[in-house]
Image 1 (cartoon, one colour):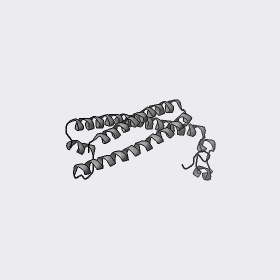
Image 2 (cartoon, one colour; image 1 turned 45 degrees about the vertical axis):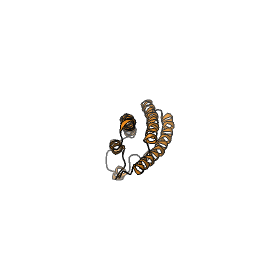
Image 3 (cartoon, one colour; image 1 turned 30 degrees about the horizontal axis):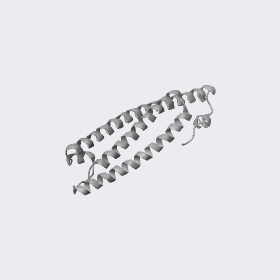
Image 4 (cartoon, rainbow, N blue to C red; image 1 turned 120 degrees about the vertical axis):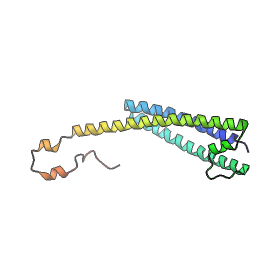
Length: 162
């Protein structure tokens, strides 16, 4: 058995991850422009991409297991790095190239998603700050005496469990 099915699957995974990276960049723009409707559509599309990537990952793992079984190589945890040790020539070069390309796209995607997470965190902090500014402090309105009001939740109208 050759590594061609594995390389082909990894190439497809790279393409899907590149598409996911493009979606992540659009998500960054949506977060910056506060476009919640566009963000919702992007998240739906992103979910479909992740499901397709999951299917490809299972196919890749199946192909790797078949390759190990066909070669009669014992393995604890089948990995591409370990496969590279058992291949030679053009197969090794093709597998290494597919692996490197996928790793680069994954690193870019991780960086972009970290940026999106930071933007989301900042947006939530802004919303919380805005809510705190809209709701007057009970200590300033009442000059003391009524302890029952101070134990009540400050955000009873807006605060709910998700």
